[in-house]
Each structure stands twice: as C-alpha cells, then as structure tokens.
Amino acid sequence: MTRSDVQLMLDVKAGDDVSFGLLLAKYRLPLVNFLFRMVRDTATAEDLAQEVFLRVYRARKQYSPSAKFTTWLFRIATNLALNSVRDNRHRQMEVSLDAPVEEDESPVQVPARVMPIDEHMVERDRAQIIRRAIAALPEKQRVAVLLHKYEEMDYGEIAKILDCSESALKSLLFRAYETLRVQLAPLVAQPVAHRAGEGRPS
Amino acid sequence: MKCEDVSNELIAYLDRRANSAERQEVEAHLAGCAACRTRAEEFRKLWTVLDEVPMIEPSAAFDARVRQRIASEPERGWFARLVPQPRLAFSVALLVALSVWLAGRPVDRPASFANAPSEEEQFQMIDHLGVLENFDVLTKSDVLSELPPRATQEQAPAHDEARPKGDGG
Image (tube, rainbow over all chains, first blue to last red; front, top):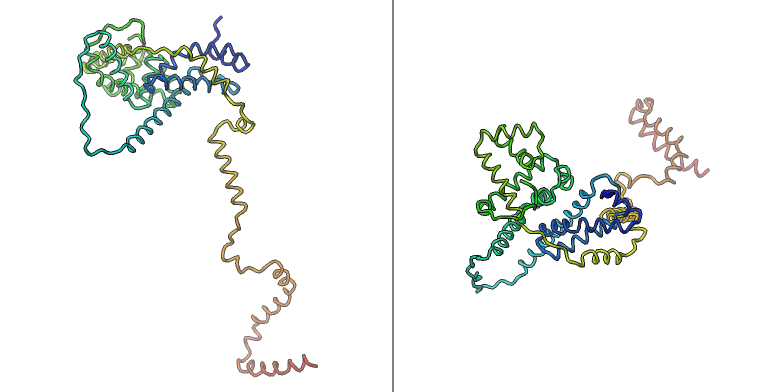
C-alpha cells in the first residue's frame, strides 16, 4: 500500500529516515525543475532544492498536516527562489554600478546570427526563447504559471502558496498567459512537433 | 457575459476545471465572440508550445549532497529551539535591550514638579497645619477688613514695639 505524502512526513517526524528518502526521490525532479525555471541556473536550482529538503527535515518535529505536503514544499521553494532572484538582481545592480566607465568604449560587436539548420538546434533555440519569456514575467505571475502549467496544481493549492484568493489567481494566470501569448506569438504561429505526454493536456 | 468577465474564467474553462455553470457561460460567450474564440485557441496552442521546454535531470550526487548537508547541521541550542524564527529572536532581544535602557534612564519630571515640596517639608507642613489654617481665617476675616486702614497702620508699630519687650522679658 502506498503511503500518502502526509503519512510519509509523519513517519519522518517519528524518526523514520527511509520515509524521508522516499519524499526526496519523489520530489527531487519536480523541485529542481521548478527552481531551474525560476532562477535559470542549474547549480543554483540544485542548491536551492537541497536547501528545501534540508528545511523540511529541520522542521520535521514541528510538522502538522494542516495543508497538503506539496503546498508546504512548494511554498518553501517559492520563497527561496524569490529571495535568490532578488539577491541576484541586487548583486547584478551592484556590479553594474561599480563597473568602471570607459569613455572610449566601442559598441559591443554582436556576431551575425547563424540560422540554425539542425532541427535539434531549432528546438533548443525555441526552448531558450520560452524560458526567457517565462523568466521575464513578474514574480507572482511566473510562479503561478510554473505551478499551473508544469506542476499541474489546482487553483486552491497555488492560491495558498501565493497567499492570494482563487479569483485573484485566475486573473493573475490570465494576465500571465496573455503576456506569453503575445511574446511567443511567432512560436505559437509555427509550432514544432512536440514530445507527446508532456505537460497538461490542452 | 462580457469579454472582461470571460477572461477570469477562460483559463479554468480551457484546463477543464470550470464547473458546469461557468463552462456554459464561457461557451455561450465564445459562440458569439470571434476575438475571444481566437484567444482561447491561441492559449491552447501556447500551452503546447510551453511543453517544448525540456526537463533537466538533477545531478547523481543530489541525494548524497542533501544527506551530507543534513549530517553537517549543527545541533540547535536551547535558545534556537525556543525561538525558531530569527526575526522573532531579534525582536525579543531588541525589546529586552530597550527595557533595560528605559529602566536605567533618569526620570524626567515635569517642570511643575520641580518646585514641589520634599517629603520632609510636607510632614512639617502637616505639623503646622493648625497655625496655617488660623492664619488663613484671620486674613480673610470680615471684621479685620471692616477696620479703617489708618487704625491698622497706627496699631501696627505699637504692636511691633511691644513685641521685643515681651520677647526680652
């Protein structure tokens, strides 16, 4: 019989380390991917995902199943990701402010873009454009899209993670998808054959 | 239902989470609104496009790294266990420091209290309360006020002269 996440966590609370290993195995992949889509850096995403598990383990004694386990897990992940994004933005701002000003600086030479001929390269380019468009969304909209589209969470759960009402979430999602529809219009107009079985059924 | 109203329900309609009443309302609107119909179709295509983003695989050492971080966690002290939130701990520490500072500070009395009699003076005043009351009665006495002013002036030196004699004898 498969134990629920809540039961696994209660077992972790009781000192069962094997249950913690099961939760780790189950949520390692979705967490790393969610965090990667948030921070767009593999090493940072892994580091943050490890931090999420560390915090779950640290809080095991105080755990009470008041909400779904995934709500708690992704709430920790969201907070860590947003802090990381803000810290990174702050660091980049400091670097750009501290950078020496060169008066005689010549404009950056951008090499002429070579048209991808390989289909794999086309796919990679498209994925890059999509990631960039998602990353450009406002923080809350980005989290909402990632949890809705890729984690397939229900509205109630996402609303709890984002600390907003379900009605506000629906409006947030509409605005986010509307922005993506406009930003990714060329890709929407020219779809490529995608791998079946990925993401939410449309 | 207007286009603005349908926008909030459109996503729930497309991902099949709208209830039957909401679904019917959206369908009725889409049947008569070409713009919203196009948007709905493009949202469906957008979701297919979003699926193109590949998943990344966590490194092979991921689990071991988590275990390592857990193992290297320092044992939490009694204060950390009592106050699990750093912000709360900081607030408590600040409150304690503020209380200590306020307790050690000299008390500023209002100016009206500066000339107030000390405790000893107040006791002396209570001892002489009878005399003070008599003085008060005499100064406000109608009989004295009815006396002609000259008579009072004339009597006063005589009284003053008489007093040393009395004191001396």
